[in-house]
Each structure stands twice: as structure tokens, then as C-alpha cells.
Length: 112
Length: 113
Image (tube, rainbow over all chains, first blue to last red):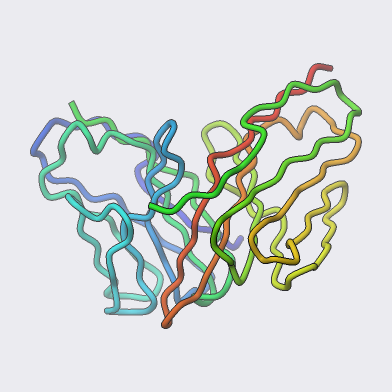
């Protein structure tokens, strides 16, 4: 089944403890992206990647890192999480930069 | 950042009624997308519109790409309980090889059986 898979689905952590949220797609998509969703603010783009080894900042990149060493994987790294990064995170991918995005099921992160 | 104006923010309707929601922007887009998000899930693509004036249907859903490229609407006919959820519009622009996707704030649809 074609899908975008994120792990974990739920994560509770403490301030400053490094974490990684994994994202994998099995559709051979070139374009991948991370979003966060917050009440009243909608979906905001964190980082995106147009292909392997090509990443760039979205609208809210501060406090996040990404890597794209392989086409199928696009992990989101929080080196030193803070409470304002408590949010619902979505990974998404598309065949190309001009194609519609397909979203994963989300990771709900709580930073205390 | 840039946002789309999506309305209404919420709707409370009776099962069987038709639903209409729309998005407007001050900017033009190459593509308009409509997504539905169920609780605890990621947004699921419903309809993609690629051409100004395009009218596209997906079952009971119909969406149109505005002639000015700055707006889109989504209609749902004869609503059923599984239509409950949050609907998002998104405008997509490809500029200098990069994708810009801007989302509306969502329309929360509630259906009374």
C-alpha cells in the first residue's frame, strides 16, 4: 500500500532531550516536506527536500534539522526541544515539486 | 506567513444537506487542492485542480478553480455522517523550482443525523 509512514505516533519528552521523528515513503517520491499543525495557526511548513541531499527551510525552521540521505527517508531532528515545539507534526511527500502532497498520519509531540 | 481565507470556519448541518465552502487569496496559484482531515489522522487529498476555470468531481464532491486563480470552492452534495471532519483548501505555487503550499484555516463540518 502506497503510504507515508511516521514514527512514533505519540511522543512525550523533556526540554533539551534530543529526538528524531522518522518519515518514510514507499512511492519513490522526489519531494518531501515536514509541517506542524497548531490550533489557530493551521499547517506551517518546517523544512522541505526536493531530492536526495537537497533540503531547504520552510516558514518555521528554527529549532529543527532534517536530512535526506536516501530518497525514501526524511527524518525530522529536534536537537534541543523546547515546550513551544509541542505540536502535531506531519510528514508529506509528492512525486515532484508540482504534484499534490500526500500526508502521513502525524506525530503528536509534547515537550515538558 | 501567507494564508488563505477559508470560510466558513465551521458548519452544522443535517444529514442529506448540501455543503459549500470556499477559499480566497490575494495571490494567484498554479494549483488548488482540497484535503479532508479526520481526528487523529493526516490530511487526505480529495481533489486537485490544475487549470483556471476547471470544475472537477469526485463522487459527491465537486470543486472549482476560480478564473482569477485566486479562489476555489468545494461542494459536497447529500452529506452523510462520514463526511464529518475538517476540510482544508491549499494553494500551490511552483516558483524557481521550489514548491510553495499555503493552507486555509479549515472548515469543521458537523452533521446531525
